[in-house]
Image 1 (cartoon, helix red, strand yellow):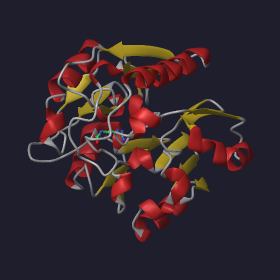
Image 2 (cartoon, rainbow, N blue to C red):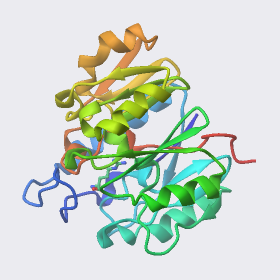
Image 3 (cartoon, rainbow, N blue to C red):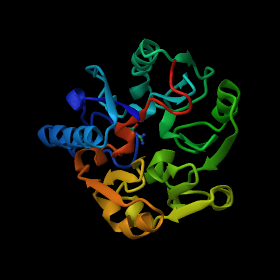
Length: 269
Ligand code: ARG
């Protein structure tokens, strides 16, 4: 497994584009770096190859690599951010992905799409969120660009503005998700399509427990995930690595937002 990360060198709360962000609640930069390094170290210990993209000054949210694009079989559908504050990241993500051999496709003009933050594979099926950052029209484009089936899920709670804050594929048949973050029809759809679901209480999800990544049978997440050890063990995930993410949560992010898996589908040749 290979994961793309971006050092939190220019990370901070410089604007407010989700309910977690408050410009007056400053990031402790030292602590942010420690938390980020602990995540990087965890990946290395679990045998994950960590790749780094250069941080860009003036782009405080670039640390959230999950939002760059969705990647599948060597193709990348590049994000087009909802908010102008993040649109300046787009050329940097494009260059970084091209440099790594991806065939990059852009999102059609006027359509918002926020990458793996809102589009996650369970097996060969792409589950995609809409309602806050990604437009539903983006899903049709994803299906065409990647040649995959897309399941559209409606997000309804502004705290869970990206799919990866409330939905986490753990393996080909297991997902943990917070039903209350979804329109009832979408929650039902998840239960119907995914063979094994772990339902996460909304207060646990609000600690960014679902903003997690599975490395084999180990799950890396925030401290709140300690409360999911029971159900995760029962589902065959024997180790939960629960990391403090306080500084990134001030921006509305956790483990998964800081991580973009590069080898989804077939790896780049
Ligand atoms: N402050 C960032 C934003 O609001 C946080 C992004 C979190 N990323 C994620 N994949 N959920 O855009």
